[in-house]
Amino acid sequence: MIPLILIDSKHFGKFVIAPLNIVMYNVFTSHGPDLYGTEPCTFYFLNGILNFNVGFICALLAAPILILNLYLEGNQKKPKNPSALLYLAPMYLWMIVFFPLAHKEERFLFPIYPLICFAGAFAVDCIQKIYHQLFHKKIFANYLEFTSWISIAFCAIYCLFSLSRTVVVYKGYRAPIETFMELG
Image (cartoon, rainbow, N blue to C red):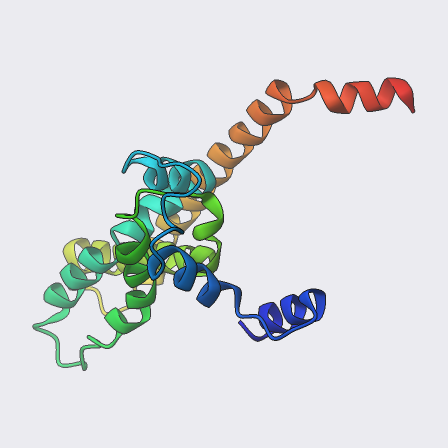
């Protein structure tokens, strides 16, 4: 957040906190939210899936997956970590504030892009722990010894979907690039 504030403040010539400005304008003013049109409630879900594919789905499911993981670990003597929900809370809070608003833009989500990545990775880690609890609980070993294939599969699927989107965008919007190449 500090680099964002420093860069924005330097370029705007005054102190700027862009995420706070987005909230103040789009949530707390009467003219802001609907001034430039509205989108259906599915807009952010579709946009999140386009940008983060399986990562966005995992991020949305991170809290329920964490709760299931905590439940399965409940019988063990190691301490639980319910405070992990606090790490996920800012993403969910941002979504609770912005998803219901009628006016939707992709730029309203950029402040939580890092949180979406974190929550998606956190969910995959919890899925690994759940798998270990269900299928390898009797073996006293680190869960990563038996579940690293889950994160590798997740990364492979994520990369394949991301690559396919890149190819589709290139094929669908290559005319300006080809024109530039012909002129250059």
